[in-house]
Structure formats: structure tokens, C-alpha cells
Length: 136
Image 1 (cartoon, rainbow, N blue to C red):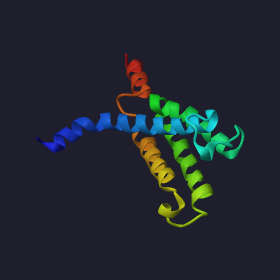
Image 2: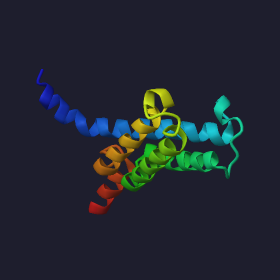
Image 3: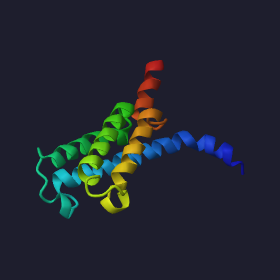
């Protein structure tokens, strides 16, 4: 089996999978922060217009848009900035090392979203569908 050919064939679809899963995970954080489901102890006291509540709104709405692949580049860029902000506000003051400050997840989300802002949503996205419809 030629792995290069397989990789070239699968690459655009794996981009769509990365976009969907990243959006789903962020959406899940938004639901947990705003609707307390599932119950997560650290989100138990989050109020809608607190810093964490606003972050939850971003994650809920923009995570949903990312799942669908709607305005992927802009949405991913905003989410990348939100994750960088979350890291530097919440995690970096604790320790320089992400392993000690529990900041690995926002770093991964930040760079995954930054990649999606650059690469787009892939062929299985509303962006791709809208581009295709405009060509007709």
C-alpha cells in the first residue's frame, strides 16, 4: 500500500474530521459551563456574564459553527485567540510548565484552531457546500 497516495486521498477528509472533533469538544465545554451538563465541579459556579460564562458562550456558539464548518477560518481564528487568552490568564500564572499548570488542553486547542484558520474547513463543511452552490 502506498502511504503517500493514501495520505493524499485522506488528507482533506481528515481535515474535516479535525474541524468537527475540535468544534464538538469546544461545544461540550460551552454546554458544561452554561447549562451545567454534564456536571463539572469547576464549572458549578460559572455565571453567564462572568469571564468563564462569556468563554462558554464563545465555545457554545463558535464551537457549533466549527462543527458545521460555517465561516470556519474566521471562527477558528477567534477561538484560537480565546484559547491563547485562557492559557495566559488562567494557566500561565500558575507555572511556566504546561504540565504543571494544566494548560496543555488550551494550548492544543489554540494551535488546532490556528491550523483550521489557515487550512479551512475541508470538503465536508458548510463552507465547501456554499462555495459549490455559488459555482452553479
